[in-house]
Image 1 (cartoon, rainbow, N blue to C red):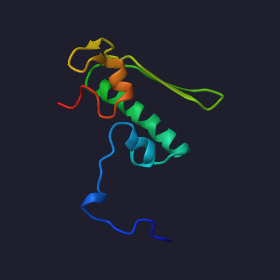
Image 2: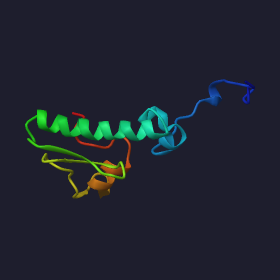
Image 3: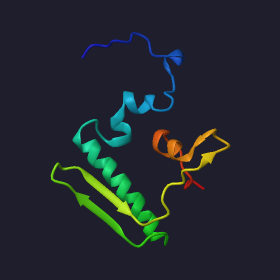
Image 4: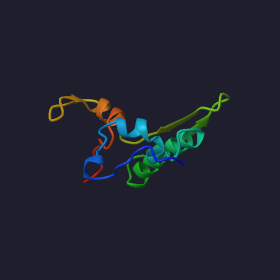
Length: 107
């Protein structure tokens, strides 16, 4: 294995922002950049539905696996707030689905 970088010092360190950290290293978020990563994202979505139900915000979770091997998770929880977010200057649905670590369940 060859070393492509000769020096590793204070100037070598940088923080990736936003989606760049997923694009460069998808395995960190999803466990892999292949099929295993897709399966992991399914379990994250299912886990969110289970959390909603456990907290009393839903009582039905439907998981459907289609012939093309795609998967759909449908729950009867609170759903996703879609209104315009004045603080962020964007719609909440866009923040939740497009920005890492955007959400309202961190408090």
